[in-house]
Amino acid sequence: MESKAKKGLQAKLHVKAGDKVVVIAGDHKTAKGEDPKLVKKVIIDKQRAIVEGVNIVKKHKKPTAQNPQGGIVEEEAPIHISNLMVVDTDGNATKVARRKEDGKTVRYSKKSDKNL
Image 1 (cartoon, rainbow, N blue to C red):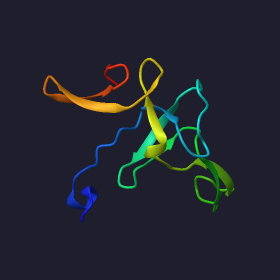
Image 2: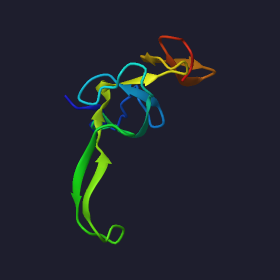
Image 3: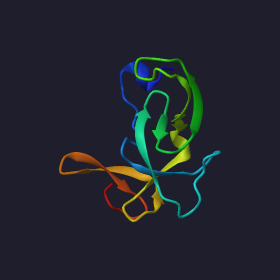
Image 4: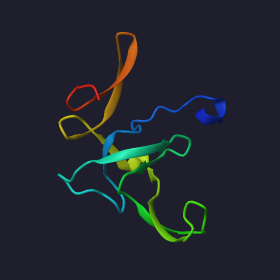
């Protein structure tokens, strides 16, 4: 069975770049009431997202023109999107659904029924 990526189709994910999310599972699970984090980038074919301030890892970098010193650098590593939940305008973690409005597909919060 071929995946959607191999067929040339793009997967529809509940998270996209610029969304505010909370981590619901794993080592970086956010406490209730903690500020939501911003999604920097979504890697569609691996179903992972890079989230600001989450899953920080230390990488050993060689000296380059941009970083002549080299050394150990802390950066965000991708986290699986199943561990993320989108935060709506009310600040609640919610599931995301899609509907057609004026011929366009829009994402909306299933909890508050407001557009995201």
